[in-house]
Image (cartoon, rainbow, N blue to C red):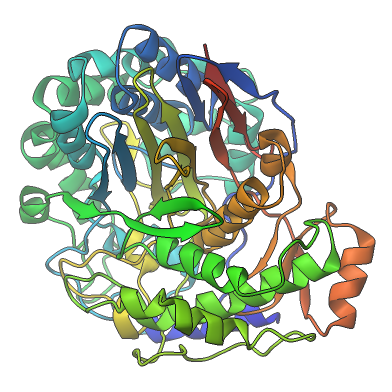
Length: 567
């Protein structure tokens, strides 16, 4: 078994999940280049053309970047249901051009008040396998996406809340053509135990709806109407709250002693989004800002940039030296991430120490000519790290409006198709499997699990918004975003080159390189330097908006179905 599988297996066992390495949740679905878009007024890049169209329509109507992000996100919940939606959570970075303020909106799910440290066992206390745990109703966390978007809209929205739901309601009502990616993911899943979910995504013979099939979701249209009219209260009380509670509380095997869905009405009533201060650091004359804990995105990305700054500059990005240095930088930053970062409401996170320039220079001094070992503890005094099984079923969008306001939003339901339970036409998350076994990210009632989401804003020397970016990809997200930032701020790559370049990195385990896309001489060079390599599909989804003269260029990652649109 590969090292990354060993680490994941050890973590799942300690969390109460049987040793079992799960298959990739979002399998590779091709590599289709989408042309970059240019615009002088606004720009939107999302993971699906329907969502980009919705964002562009809102921007044309005079809506703000935040308005466009809400409209696009609601559409993504319809057409890309395996990745995000009403039943999940998200993290949003918003830049207000007039006040020059950055708000970091936290809509991450919380562990139910009834959550215990080791929830995933059967009646004989035998740990469940990962996929069984992900599908168990005890894995569902309190959804936070809608509450977060409503709070952000109250502060930065321009168009009426209800209007932003119209594109998604229309698509849910009249239907949309099943995309190649959605079909392939459904075929890979095989079937769903939830009868409503099975009937929605598969025909009477148990076959996934084919590409081009018009998929309608009247139940989701009705839920969207309720949220459009009532805001997040629709998920806290009434019909939708009951639907969520019923979906989570029901469906447990009768012979599982003490097993029950943990999420209840009091969790839905108690949930509140949080507005946090962005985490910013300088790099090559720019200021890079990301999301603070409980996300590990910014701490890891900024640590990688800080370590990188202390290494020799000017290394070509397609060289073995670049790949070696990048993997070793990630190895060090991910070691610190594992032991130190969690929900700051439960454990203080030593952010200043993690990103201290002198500390990162000492970390950089550990990067030698040969690959270093996996590090079982951080370089500063943190708790012993637990392990986790964070999954890459997520989406990201990046938007800039005509006033120069920017939004980077990453959202998720965790595993592909989340908990495989449907309530009100939308899928519920399985975020409790996102907690670690111990340390700062161990499971506790009311706690937000550590995230790797890294919605990022970049500012130039004049303090102007220069770039908006982020990616899905689970715990690989910091590597994806850091690589994109190096290409943008140091490597001189175009937006199109940045989103399509071969992916690589280390998560403090083997050095991972994208299957079939990394140059042979780089792979051979890494092996010569002692890297244990894992060639794998790496389904990043970089959505990038970059300032260009008086306008913007947008580019979407060709590994998904994204598209850029602007004018």
